[in-house]
Amino acid sequence: MSIDKPVPTVTLPDGQTVPALGLGTWRMGEDASQRPAEVKAVRRAIEMGYRVIDTAEMYGEGGAEEIVGQAVAQALTAGDVKREELFIVSKLYPHNASRAGTRAACERSLTRLGLGHIDLYLLHWRGQHALADTVAAFEQLKARGPIRHWGVSNFDNSDMDELAEVHHGEHCATNQIYYSLGQRGPEFSLLPRLRAQGMPAMAYSPIDQGSLATHPVLRRIGEQRGATAAQVALAWVLAQPGVMAIPKAVQESHLRDNLAAAGLVLTAQDLAAIEQAFPPPRRKTALAMR
Image (cartoon, rainbow, N blue to C red; front, side):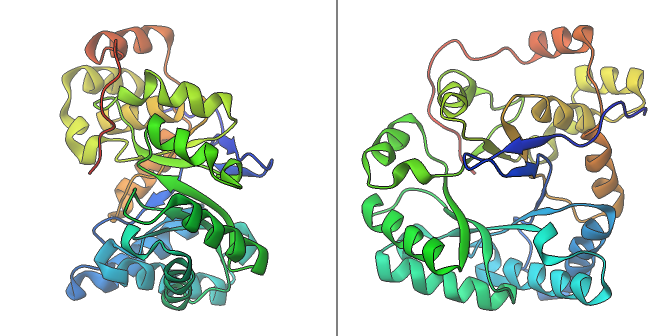
């Protein structure tokens, strides 16, 4: 596969640029026997050049954060990367999202990660606590230093409307959503809204948890480009304006494939074939979640 461009970036509302490809850690930390391999995978990703790592207190009930923390500590000790070069993302359980609960959860996440700050801290999805309280806690954490940016996840237009009415709601840095060729619903109204606000979207499950890896149209395009179907699917997501992607990978071959996909250029003919196989939405649909 020939790579014709560098890894793209997205720009946060405050002007900071971030690599558009990151590493997801969903389902990591759930099985103690897999922990050494998962730590090795995150460490290897950093060695390869991954700089955005996404996790959450929900993943393995903190286990994934511990894995990320171990891998980052090893990388920092070895001199593979400097802390300021990494962009670590974690997410807050909705039931912890009261003012006091948010601060306490953040401290627990920092302890598991072994870090002094989290670069981006997200509300994982809507819960029973008032958005005003969660945002107030985010702003306090940001002012004190434990977090650099805050955002939301799994927020549809109505949720973003509510957020816009909250004091300091305009400080939201991103919205992490399920977005892929198989889940193009956000394109109807949510993605245009985020772009108008200068707020990037973070696409999780950009390869539909691997199900797109066998799609015949994507496979045919990949064969013509010296790539896999999964790489074509990921390249398509990364080509969308204002979108970053955080696919999970543990195997080194998948880490390499995903990184290479960030430089894969799809032709107009490729894009036309993809549009025919995966038509864009014609109406508003509920935001998909997993």
